[in-house]
Image 1 (cartoon, one colour):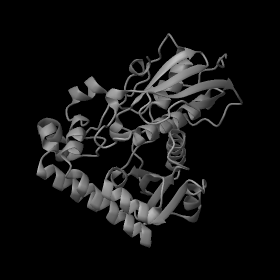
Image 2 (image 1 turned 90 degrees about the horizontal axis):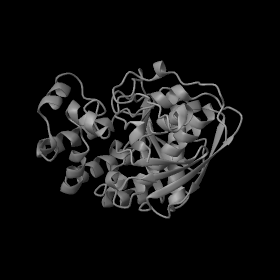
Image 3 (image 1 turned 180 degrees about the vertical axis):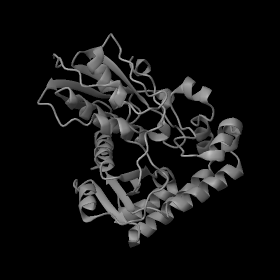
Length: 349
């Protein structure tokens, strides 16, 4: 396959955030470097970025997972890993369209423990609508979600994929029930030492850790500000995450967060197969990217799907094959992304 000769990418479009800079890899060329760079801006649990890419030919790639980035405590079945692979694939597909390429995905994984996840083939196609800026700017937002009800048009947008999505306003019976389930599940999760210890391993309190790892959560991604952020960067470490004070503050924060949103977006898979779960990840990312221009913020709240009691509650409330529960709401100002990213050279194998 021959890539188009034009070059659409401009570094000045990249949000001003350390450790997110585009560094083309000469061995694979600027265009494929750019597609992979945009793909790797996809969301993942704990921002673990569990993907690798192997270039088999100019139009054939193999996407695999990194066992060292598996979340064995909070995601023992690697369900969330497959969802993260789905968000990566959706970003890849939309980035490829910028270069007049259609990405075809062949799921290789039988379950979340297969390291080889997806084979990707690229073919020429008509250039799609440029979505580069949206891919660059998408982020998770936890604060300042408004409780203003979504317009009919925006609700219809979230529900375009009728067999995969449901939406429940915050003041509906199910909306109120989800608020209680999320709060209870979060409280249960903070009481599990293995989960808290794993979380502690993925928080980068100091700038030196950010630079060393390029993955994980930071005070910025947790939306700390002012003195709290300064204190966290200078005095907090892994031991704080295991403290009763940290757990109590986390529970209080979640209790406050669920009070402020327009409603809850639920995304389902057709079944429990690896391919169906990956597709649910693609569905989430596709909707998320389109929601940004509508000023709708997304805050995935995964606790009920990670806790046994929460799973039972969700089954009774929503039925089977629920893969995402997302707190959504309008936001006045959509800030630039701040999450860490691995450099492209560490994604390529």
